[in-house]
Image 1 (cartoon, rainbow, N blue to C red):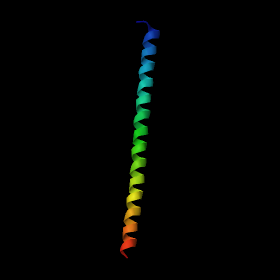
Image 2 (spheres, one colour):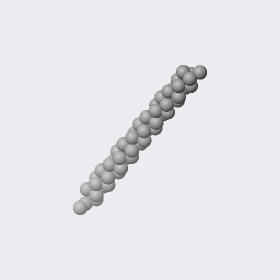
Image 3 (cartoon, rainbow, N blue to C red):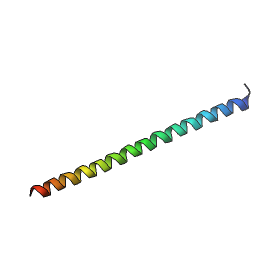
Image 4 (cartoon, rainbow, N blue to C red):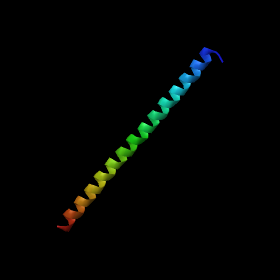
Length: 54
């Protein structure tokens, strides 16, 4: 295996790692967004229950 081939392999691995990290971050962002929406909905529902009770 010559130097060029070795460099190409290493570059491919680095790109793979970057893609994987980007995917993980995207799924974390989606989870955080979903949690935020859920919290908002639960708070609104709670507020509506309080308003209905009074």
